[in-house]
Amino acid sequence: MSFLDVQNLTMRFGGLTAVNDISFSVSKGEILSVIGPNGAGKSTLFKLISSFLKPTSGQVLLDGIVISGKQPHQVARTGVVRTFQETTVFKEMTALQNVVVAHQLGLKATPFGAYFSTSAARIDAKASAESAAEILDYLGLGSMKSELARNLPQGHLRALGIAIALAAKPRVLLLDEPFAGMNSEETDRAVQMVEGIRKRGITILLVEHDMRAVMRISDRIVVVSFGSKIAEGLPAEIRANPAVIEAYLGQDDEQIGSF
Ligand SMILES: Nc1ncnc2c1ncn2[C@@H]1O[C@H](COP(=O)(O)OP(=O)(O)OP(=O)(O)O)[C@@H](O)[C@H]1O
Image (cartoon, rainbow, N blue to C red; front, side, top):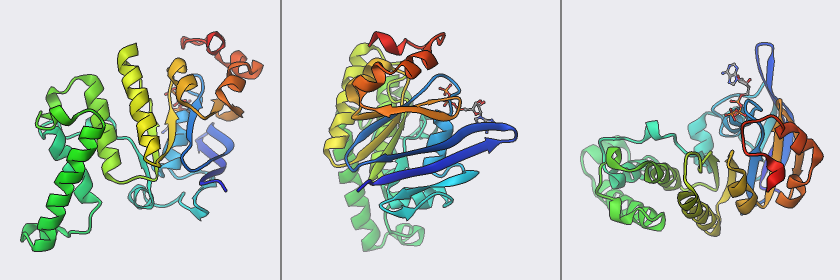
């Protein structure tokens, strides 16, 4: 049975159809990538799945329950979490503090309880710090946990964004261009990191332009062009698909046919 179901999603902005009747399913523990030329509708699709946008029509189900149309924080609580752009990292806090805050937001301690330092809040604080340190270690950021976020190099800042998302204990993690701007060594590390996250039982959906990384990491790929799904399949199938190659011709991106 599929875990995440995207059913006939459509998003119109005025006269522009950014996402046009897109459907696909993701199995539990799968890594599925959404690719497509610039402006194809990938980011809009992600915003619909994480409920940052309400679809014009269609729906998204997690484990058979409709999640589209809910508030983003409600969707996050059901376990669908997207990575945060660097701008939402608190730059004046340490890496550890950033993940602790994210973890605490997912816990039950009320602000009232935390304010009066009740024993429940103290236990939560200890659990948050332990959980945050474990996540940072896991993502290879352990040695940087006391570093202010603003001093972290770009690659580590991106990993911190993933750590913050993991603190919310996702069942499905949406990664928006996790390898953008990385050199091949950084990409290798990030690919391993994403594979490691999947090994923890988390289902992963990613949007990415780095075709080499996509081909390496994905179980399956969905291709969108001008808002519509034009192909879906295994990396080898997508690489050889004439409609996909056609869609990428003339793009500045690395051409899909060469991988
Ligand atoms: N809020 C909005 N209002 C109006 N048009 C929008 C809005 N958001 C996106 N669009 C348009 O929808 C289309 C799809 O954009 P989207 O950002 O989803 O594409 P993308 O595939 O993520 O592109 P890229 O790879 O360049 O990031 C584009 O034509 C874009 O201009």
